[in-house]
Structures are given as structure tokens and as C-alpha cells.
Length: 379
Ligand code: CAA
Figure 1: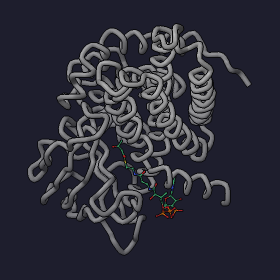
Figure 2: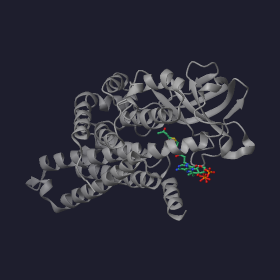
Figure 3: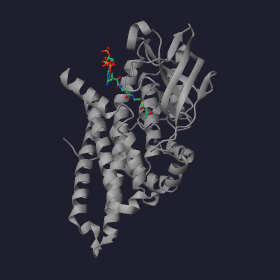
Figure 4: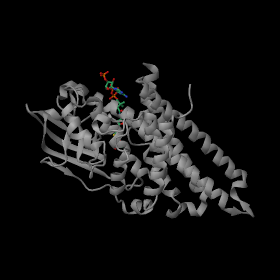
């Protein structure tokens, strides 16, 4: 078992840290307040290779491993968790699916641009009545010969307003249950495609979340990813990898909370000395640090197994389940350590606390992660 990073992995980590500090930190509070999308920052991240990190270089990707992805996600999320989820969805949910299962034509047409951040993508699985119960898809993709006719509504879609292409999961043959579901690439300009109002969210506010509506949208058959009926399995496979991304986002929120707390505790004085001298604060920091280290190891283990081509379903679910709990705990404690200052925006920790909550909800709630883990244990 090797616990050290390669030089390449350390270089990626450092590049992500520099980018986050220099390009994401300025304006992060304002973007959160105004719910403004980090358009310019995402463009730069595309140039640096952060939007298609694991994509085959043949299609303009970075050709990096999942461990590098975890390291970069943590650094980005430490400073700006909204930008981290935009990055995670594009990398794990959209690029990965096309890179792994797309046709040459789909790769040349879409992946080459997604991987550079020239365009960004969204993944449309959730519906008003199909969140955790993802097999209950109501959106239909009727087979019309050369094309699919798509009708339905998708909810809570990250990158919903800004994405140029969406991977839409829809039911083609209801009699076949989840084996009648397809995954289809739909372009934003398609007739009948409309974007609902932007959701006004508790956290990750500068990421862009919308409902997407499909009314008789025609998508060419050649835009289906994988064989007929493979859509649900593909969605599950996509989410296995996606959970490593969200676990790393949660890890970044937690480690960002801790770093800010350590800095503040050394500066802030009570009873004539820095609060870092008080055992009450020291115990909070030591618990945060221990939990964060455990979360990091779970993330890296899941990434390592994925890179090795081994089954990582359980490990990814464990990483997400645990890291999201750690993010909640660390960010709440960070606000507590900061006291009254923690409750105002300038000190960043209240934002981290609001951002942490969603990591227990999207890409499978904590309850769903428990189901996934238990099924892997018992099968
Ligand atoms: N990996 C690969 N295949 C899987 C899988 C996994 N993790 N989980 C299930 N499957 C396969 C099963 O093997 C089965 O295939 P076969 O019939 O060929 O054996 C098929 O999928 C159906 O599985 P189940 O019978 O287990 O289905 P289920 O209805 O009992 O439950 C579930 C499945 C695990 C609960 C699933 O519905 C699930 O993961 N729900 C959560 C959905 C989710 O995570 N949504 C997040 C939305 S996306 C998002 O949040 C993105 C964003 O914006 C940030």
C-alpha cells in the first residue's frame, strides 16, 4: 500500500490550489449572494484542463487519473464549492459517460468541446416524482425511427441554464421497466426544449440549478449513448463515479472549514490569550482533522479502485456518505469557533456551512448511499 502522491498528482493539486486562491477566492462572497455563475472562472478552468480531467487526450482531455481529480476537487471546493459542483458534473457525469460509452461521432462533436470547457454539460435524471426512486422515470423518449421524441420534466438540474448539451435519461419502453430506459444527448437549441426559472438555493448558490422541460423534442437516434435500454444502468454507473466527485467536494468544504478555523483560532484572543490555547477549541480542531483525514482516505481509496478498473461502487458510496457528514460537522464547528464572526458572510464559514448540506442530498442522499453500501455487502 503506497500513501504518497506522484509528482504529477502533486502538480495538479498545486495548480488547483493556486487557481482557487487567485481566481476563485476574489468575488466568491458576491457570487454566492447574487447567485451569479462563474462564467469567466469556468472558461479559465477549461483552459487549465480542469473541465475534462480524465478524458482521453485524443478528445482534448487531460488524461489524468481519478486520484488527481479528487485532489483538484478538494482544492477547488475549499474555496468555492459552487464552482466545484459545476466542475464535478461536467467531469464525472457528462464527460465520463461520453468518453466511456459514446460513439466516435459523439466524442468528436461533443466531448472535444466539453473537455475544454468551451461548452458545459448537464445530467438529467431527477424528476418531480423520481429523485431517490430513480427507476420511476416519467419522461418518455418515444422511438420514432430516426429519432426519439422526448416529453417530460427534469428537476434540480445542475448547470441547467448554462449547459449546451444534456444527457437526458428517459423511458422508451415502459413494459421493460428500467431495461426500457435510454440515455440521450440533447442539445439546448432543440425545438421544444425550455429552461425553468433558476432555483433560489440555501447553498452552492452560484451554481446554476433549473428544471428543464421537454415538449416533443426530437433527438436523433445517433445521440443515444450505448445500446437500446442501457440508459438506467449507465445512469447508475455515471453516479458511481459522480459520488467520488461529490465526496471530494464535501472533503474540500470540510478541510476549508478547518483551515479557516485554525487561522482564526490563532488570531482571536479571549481571556488574554489566543482561543487556540483553550482545550475546548483544540478538541474541536482535533476531531475535525481526524474526520477529514478519514474522509480523504475514503475518497482516495474509491479513486484508486476506479483507476485500477476494480469494483468501487461500495467505496464511492462510503466516501460520499462519510465525507458529506464530515462536511456538515466541520462547517458547523467552524461557525461555532468563529462565534459571532462566523455568522456573517465576510468570514466564509457560514457559506461553507450552507454549501455542506447539499452534499448529503444530491447524487444520492445519505439514505441511498446506505442502501447502495448494504446491497454491495449482502449480494
Ligand atoms: N452501479 C451499477 N449498476 C447498478 C447500481 C450501481 N450503483 N445500482 C443499481 N444498478 C443496476 C442493478 O444491477 C440493476 O440492473 P440489473 O437489473 O441488470 O441487475 C438496475 O441497475 C436496477 O437496480 P435496482 O434493482 O437495484 O433498482 P432499485 O430501483 O431497487 O434502486 C437505487 C436503485 C440504487 C436506489 C437507484 O435508484 C439510485 O441510485 N437512486 C438514487 C438516484 C440518484 O443518485 N440521483 C441523483 C441525481 S443526479 C444529481 O444529483 C446530479 C447533480 O445535479 C449534482
